[in-house]
Image 1 (spheres, rainbow over the protein chains, first blue to last red):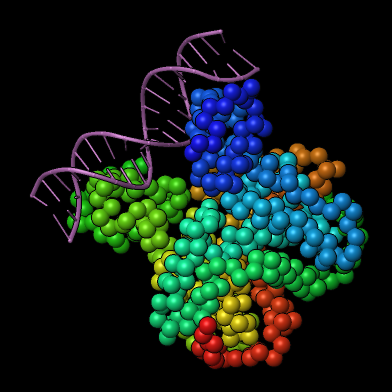
Image 2 (image 1 turned 120 degrees about the vertical axis):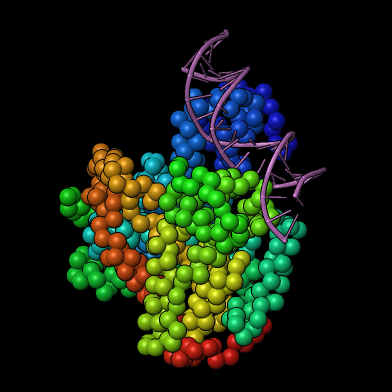
Length: 243
Length: 243
DNA sequence: ACCTGAACACCGTTCAAGT
DNA sequence: ACCTGAACACCGTTCAAGT
């Protein structure tokens, strides 16, 4: 609340607004990111933001772009195709994990910024190099990216805005709720109450999630892409076969 | 707008409110579901709803429960384990596909209603029968369910609130945007512009998405669950090994 | 070019009352 | 038990001005 009430701001700018929106979302959740809140944090009238952004959707597009700009894909891809794919997916995952409150933004805004297009292109290119057509790569790539978001949103545990003592309280409340269920109707849920109330090991959870994803893609490729450039170096797609 | 301004309502009730909330979300999107809008649709004061629900979160929990109640799992599971898993996943998918505007609700509210717990129990039980421990099944199951939601949210095409002519306009605008990109920076995205702007075949898209998911799980099971009840009949878990 | 001021049509919610 | 009325602290956004 006493974040920076009315700092002697030198100037308003797109990047300054997006910067504070990112911090605000990280600390207080995406719902806290409002035009009026950002304006007051910058010691300015709400309407001032409308000179820099057409509307709130444009602001969220800017925020999404800022998030996706942090994704660092390996510059020179080496190793087997599935290893390259895993590295790329982990690059995306680590950024989403660092900003879990923003995880849902790319779900609908992936194609609405240059950085989102960059991430998309890299993913589709990798899939295409693995033998999928650009069209198949498009559907598979969109799904792959969103499944990684789903991995983060489905991480067991309470809302990610909570911290410290309120978080521990939420975890034990959830545990108690699940343990109180009828064991004949919900035997497996009761048996897994601890694991559902809070993630046991985040690293294990995520490495297994990525593992399942890659296994699925590889298995599909092996069953589908019969002889279609199965082990291309993935520098650039051999021939994009445009339209 | 002229939906049912002030019908001579007999009585307000939880189910009547949830019913109209479901219709409203389906036709106008989740954002249209507000306390005040529902109240006016029922010809009643906003505060009237607070007798039936503690707050808006409770209303959305009720809406989620209503949605998940539509999920019909096969009563007597027959066939191979992965076929059972696929049937169960398709049962969940078909409900989400029927209500795409509500797809994101189960992401955070799965454990907050009896119907959500029912869906969770069924999923975990199946995974447990496949050889995963209840804890592993919990993490895998949460992920599986959310990945199916991700499948729906990542279906290529414009927002699902749009229909008819505005939808076609959004599709061709997206297509034009993607085709106008620099082909040296975004060759694969440009090549897949059509597939990214609108889903080619929804049935193909979804059957492949489920396919990738099942393949991933099966591959993980074959690599992991070494000899641990690999082909149990899946009626009920052999021994829940509680705690 | 960049920001203010007043206003409009919305939100969820509390609190005190009515029947 | 079930609903109303007035009020509070919020939203995003338009439109007309200011400098």
